[in-house]
Image (cartoon, rainbow, N blue to C red; front, side):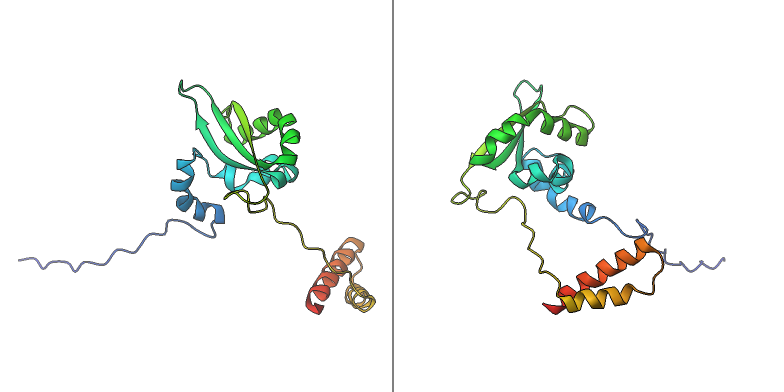
Length: 175
């Protein structure tokens, strides 16, 4: 009678190698809520500023995509405050072209702009884009220390970059 071979446990297989983009990690969790608002692509939400540009992203954000009853064409609804609506109205075609370039085909046929007050409504209470904090000016001591740190470098471009880095680090650590 032949002896049974002992079974060797299978090695778990790795699905991915290396690092993954954060947008891929979050995409699965965002899929359900975004599907309810008509966004089949999470890229439109996660990369909004990169798609339409920082100027438009600072004053408008996508809220939902609606499909027509006839099944032809979709409408992208953008939320903005009152003062920016006329400016966005003039840029509708540009925004639509940029969004369709993101999808790779003419996914959006119309854009509807919804105005809201800057405060008082649920989605209008938060600023659309984070404002950059003003950076404090470096003191003369910091400028001297940064220049001294980069002094031994001979390449001008590298020297300038290292001096700027040292200036930023020293300024941040001093406050």
